[in-house]
Every structure is written in C-alpha cells, then in structure tokens.
Amino acid sequence: MRHPDAPAPGELLGAHYGQCFGCGGDQPHGLHLEARAGEGVSLTAEFTVQPAHQGAPGLAHGGVLTSALDETLGSLNWLLRTIAVTGRLETDFVRPVPVGTTLHLEAEVTAVAGRKIYSTATGRVGGPDGPVAVRAEALFIEVKVDHFVDHGRPEEIQAAMNDPDQVRRARAFEVNP
Ligand SMILES: CCCCCCCC(=O)SCCNC(=O)CCNC(=O)[C@H](O)C(C)(C)COP(=O)(O)OP(=O)(O)OC[C@H]1O[C@@H](n2cnc3c(N)ncnc32)[C@H](O)[C@@H]1OP(=O)(O)O
Image (cartoon, rainbow, N blue to C red):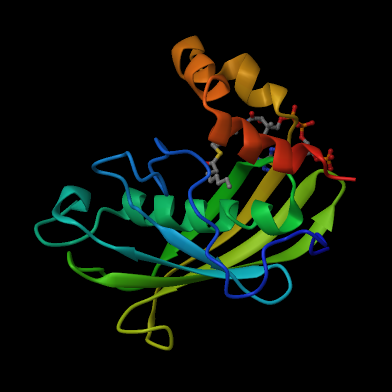
C-alpha cells in the first residue's frame, strides 16, 4: 500500500497548502500541525493548543481537536500518493485538553477498498506514550484533482495554480501509477 516514492520514515511531510487551517504556515490561527512519515502507511504529528483554539476557558474546542485528527489522517494521503477527501470522521473525546498542551498524534491506514481509504488516529497528552485524549476513525474517498478545481472558490484556485510550489505538490500526486 505504501507508495514507493513516499517520504522515508522520519521525514517531515511539510504543508500541502500554505493557507490550510491544519498545516499551513500562512494561517495565523491555524493548527500549524507538523506530520512526520512513519513505517508502512503510518505517521506521527504534533499540534500545540493555542489560546485561539479554546472552547471552554483554558480548554481546547472539540471541533479544533477533530480538525487536528482530520489533518493528521489526511496527511496519510502523502504516503499513499492518493488525492482523497474526508467522507466520514468519528471522534471520541476521552480527556479534556488544556491550552498549551502538545497533542501527540499518530495515524495509520487500516484498509483500502477501491476509492475508500479507512484509517484510525489517536492523540495523546504528556508525551508520545502519554494517556489518550482523543481518537478517531475515518473514511477518506479518493477524488481527482478536478474535485478542488470544480468546487473551490475561483480566487484561491487561480492563486494556487499560479504558485509553482503548489503545482509541484499537486503533480506529485498525479503520477500515481
Ligand atoms: C494532505 C491533505 C490533508 C487534507 C486534510 C483535510 C481533509 C479534509 O478535511 S477534506 C474536506 C472535507 N471533506 C469534503 O469536503 C468532502 C465532501 N464530500 C464530497 O465531495 C463527496 O461526498 C465525496 C467526494 C466524499 C464522495 O462523493 P463521490 O465521489 O460521488 O463518491 P460516492 O460514489 O458517493 O462514494 C464512493 C464510495 O464511498 C462511500 N461513501 C462516501 N461518503 C461516505 C460517507 N460519508 N460515509 C460512508 N461511506 C461513504 C460510498 O458509499 C461509496 O461506497 P461504494 O463504492 O462501496 O458504493
């Protein structure tokens, strides 16, 4: 399942889009999540909860934690070299996560059936071996690059097409054999 050109275990994956709420470096209130390739079709990621991510006083918003899981699970696409979007994402919130906490995430693909990619993720606090705070099961669906071109707002699509780095990242996925 792991694509032969997938980043080597230990390699940082980098942002797929600068304005992405999950991983983009140009998104001031984003999660700035950093993912690193693991063995097989797995990866690890880290995200530190900022004051802009609160739901209750001093606690992370549940939707933000789900976003961190979504981004981590979505990053598995880099290892498959498949373009896919989230179809279904089910989250268990096991412990509250205070502002300032670093969430240690890990994710792996559990099965691929046609265009359907099944995956699972956990987020731990206090360290990579700390207690589980959140976990998720997801179904991603493979799409063509047209999904984004057809549905995205024209301003952002045009800007992305004019950005050589963005085009290079998209091409890397299109050579999927
Ligand atoms: C590196 C990148 C990181 C990115 C991280 C962030 C990822 C995201 O958050 S992506 C944004 C959120 N997601 C979206 O916007 C997706 C919106 N949804 C859609 O565009 C469409 O519903 C889409 C593309 C998922 C599926 O539509 P379509 O291509 O017509 O597929 P369709 O034929 O309906 O379904 C294909 C299969 O998936 C199944 N399926 C689709 N959606 C679901 C669902 N929600 N639950 C269960 N099964 C589903 C179908 O039952 C079908 O199964 P089968 O082949 O066995 O019959």
